[in-house]
Structures are given as structure tokens and as C-alpha cells.
Amino acid sequence: MTDLPPSPYEAPGFHAEAIAAGRHRAIVGGRWDETGRAQMALLLDAGLQPHHHLLDIGAGSLRLGCKALRYLEPGHYWATDASRDLLLAGLRHELAEVPPAQRPPESQLIGDAAFTFPGVPDNITHAICFAVFPHLSPAHTEVALANLRRFPALELFAFTVFLAPEAEAGAPYRQADGVVTHPAKPPYHRTEASVQELCARLGWQAQRQDRMLPRGQVLFLARRAG
Ligand SMILES: C[S@@+](CC[C@H](N)C(=O)[O-])C[C@H]1O[C@@H](n2cnc3c(N)ncnc32)[C@H](O)[C@@H]1O
Image 1 (cartoon, protein in one colour):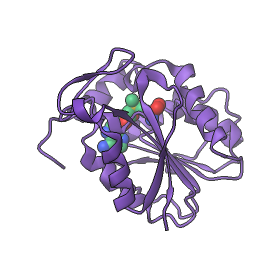
Image 2 (image 1 turned 180 degrees about the vertical axis):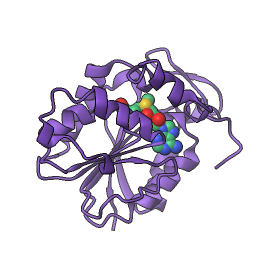
Image 3 (image 1 turned 90 degrees about the vertical axis):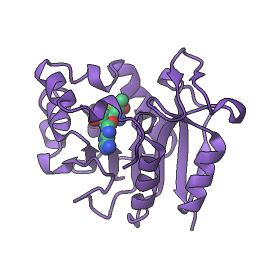
């Protein structure tokens, strides 16, 4: 998509080797329960209800899914990821506490590295992309925001990025918890103004949230502007 360096997730064999070694939790960043709870909490605070239809973009091994599936009505959870095998590892190993009737059919776990959301139905009301954009060049964020416009019922898109202050964004930047982010290689940071400009240009009204999140990521809640 760009000439910028790839993320580790784009390295050949990265997902396959980790899944084979049983590291499907580790490659989404570990901190399994805490990070799943943080995502569930932000969605509930933003108004998610059991009858809504959730799209979990870059869902990994279902760190959020294992919680959201217990909350949502059956069939209301869809997930995409660059690695479908990682989604399927989550389905196999992480849904023990989800009643069988609430587990998703494999057809709702979709391999998609291009943010085109193939096969995802029009009735999606909420979408989340958590801890994915920090790994990818800003061009991916742009494609995702543009393609999400096609979902007519979408009320809310929640996503996280790393931010850096305007004056320091051109160089490596140390986030509050110690992670060093970069302007042109992963993990990426951007300025708040650039996120706002992108959202506005693509028809979204985005609000930065003050919520504390793992690793110091910043949450934006975007709603269709018109
Ligand atoms: C840090 S993990 C976060 C996973 C999940 N959102 C969570 O919070 O548990 C980043 C995820 O992004 C996925 N990913 C990386 N590049 C992607 C792309 N181009 N399209 C979709 N998913 C991607 C990875 O496979 C991985 O599962």
C-alpha cells in the first residue's frame, strides 16, 4: 500500500509460526483479560446494547470477542483480521465461557487485510478497530474510514492510535508508558489534528476520548458526519 516499512504482522509466516506455537494470545499483545475488558467497557459506555451488531476489525484471537459474544445476541458479532487462522485459533481456544449457541459461525470470522470487509452485512451498527492502526501506515486508516461509509446502519466507529504533540511528531516519541512510537515506521504515531482532518475529509465526526488505555493508545469515537 505504501513504501513505508511493514509491520511485524506483515512478515511472512509471522501468524502461522505463532499460532503453531500456541502463542495466539501473545501476538495480539498479551494482557488478555485487561485489554478485553477495556474494549468491552468502552463499547458499553458508548451505548452498545445486546441487539446491536458489532464488527471487530483486526480482531486477532478474539480478545474482545470472547467477552462481546457473551453479551450480544447470537449472530451479532463479526470479526475480520489479516490472519483468518488467528480468528479461528480464537474460536477454537478462547470461547470456552461462551455458550455454544452464542459462538459465531466460521463464516462470520473473515480474513481481510485490506479493510474491504468482504461479506460483512449492511446491518452492522458498531465497529471497533483496537490496537491495529498503531501497527499500520496511515494509508490503512484512510482506507478503513472510507470503506466503513458503506454500512448504512453504522452508528459508531471506535478506533485507537498513538498520538504525538504537533511539535514532536516528526521524530521518535516516547509515550507515557515508555513505548517509543515513530512518524514513518511501526509503531506509528500521528497528530490529533491529522486524525481529525482525515475523519472530517472522509465524512466522520470524531471525538478524542480521555480514557486511559493499555500502552497509552488514544481512543477516538467517530460518527457519520452527514
Ligand atoms: C495488537 S493486535 C490487536 C488485536 C485485537 N484488536 C485486540 O485488541 O485483541 C493487532 C491485530 O491487527 C491485525 N492486523 C495487522 N494488519 C492488519 C491488516 N492490514 N488488516 C487487518 N488486520 C490486521 C493483526 O493480525 C492482529 O491481530
